[in-house]
Image 1 (cartoon, rainbow, N blue to C red):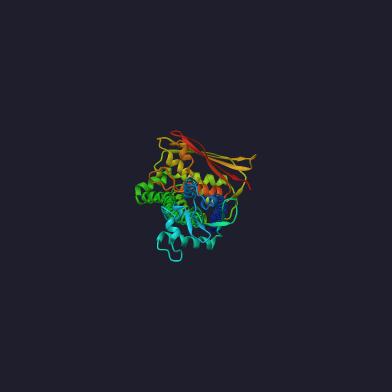
Image 2 (image 1 turned 90 degrees about the vertical axis):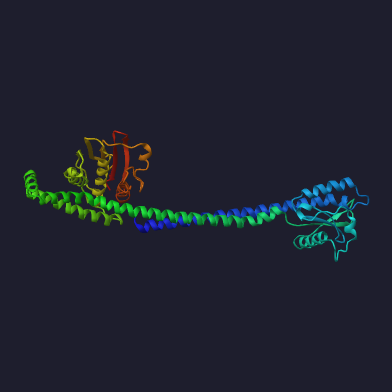
Length: 422
């Protein structure tokens, strides 16, 4: 995927995430405001109901002490603060839990107190609350028995629940922002970790790619330095010295291909019509000639059919096939190893199908699900970039597909990749 497209998608994902969080925050805030309004409305209705009941009880000419006690118990259970006063503003009763001031043992002290300059700090606090309540809410009039004249007022303030609901959107916004910050920090750390893994993996992949031709060149140099080994090698190779020089040139050309591969993998290479069967044959021949240098007793079998030309990047396709073959070589733990490469034209599906099989260790299903993930490897010294690069080359560069079609532990694995004709 081109870097610009990847950056665009990442920016768009961030925008969608931010928009989603804003929508969630606004929705929660709007719903909280609605619930707060409903709580306020219910509190007002409850207050008016209490006022209707309390007026005749509090201001009756012959107060019923039992009813007064029941009213006091009910008042204490109400979840918002209120104060009953007479017409002159003298407090009669209030709910202790919400107001925070204990009721006096008798009303005599309140009736005799100077409201302009009360000595009792509790009464002074109640009068201050009455003024605060009246600034925000109109006091509710109380009517005496029979619904006659106004005998007092009920002054009430906001409930604790309402106050908590008012602060809730701000707390929610703070939690959302904290969560966003934690997510961004986690993403940044994850990105840094992934970048470090990719850089280390690509560096090791470079060494791995250069390892085969360099090992081969080292072997030829060792042979050519020793006169007896040089004479034996020239006599053994068909074509003599020319053949030896040709193999050395092949290794030098391979180093050039490695450089070309890494220059193309980071960009969007231009695909041109190419013969996949010829690319596969060259890759197999190169690797087959170097099997002795790799210390493997492996036979590479091929069934490569002539196929129609398809748009390909030959250096990258060669890289992908080489990685698959080397992956099979690494998986072989038997004295007699076998690799098989099959290439055929699937006319019905309009694609070219390539199968790479080995008789190595095989993989459990849990490994098969992660085998193409960058950084995942079952090898003790593996770096998990080989098959990840294969998938990138096949699927992102060539719009093809690669998967594991068969793998049994102890018997081997088969990878399948296909390339579209167009």
